[in-house]
Length: 230
Image 1 (cartoon, rainbow, N blue to C red):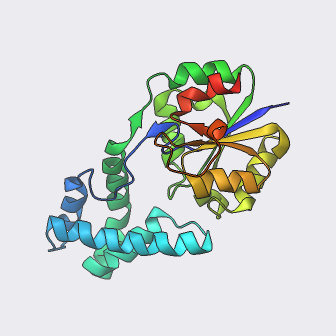
Image 2 (cartoon, rainbow, N blue to C red; image 1 turned 120 degrees about the horizontal axis):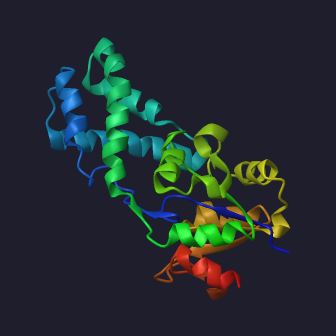
């Protein structure tokens, strides 16, 4: 008997751009300029993308999560003197996240669907993220935070999906067992394979049919979930 539904966040409960440069970051660049940095806007984006890309590559191999402050500190030490880098870290990261959020797009029919599902199942979010406040802030902004029993983030847990520990911790948090739980996400490795390895059933959001999953496990959108569960 199905009792619990677990959701990824980015690419599942919202559409988003995973790019670190396309959203446009003029205010973040201005913080650097005001702190004494002399690199141009395009150079700033290229350098940031390279530094963050190295952190991503290391995390994908180790499945240990990194924080925005870690990648920010590594970047700022390349473009500012130590004192200026320390002073600029918090405002730069706060501003960068705010500008990155411009690529996040809400799903109009999601709150109504969650309201119905929450009457039948216990809901939870399990997400990879580099900021402990980012996903909870979005859930609150969207007016859907109250539907979720818990929010488990990789940055707070320490391990990122598809590491089995983060799925097991999530099940423990809500008193669920894997055999009675379903996970919904948009990443084949992190979400679908990770959840399946933890013993959970899983749906993959894969509108173009690009990944090798059974058709009954494929969704074009999370908004198809309710009908599929029926």
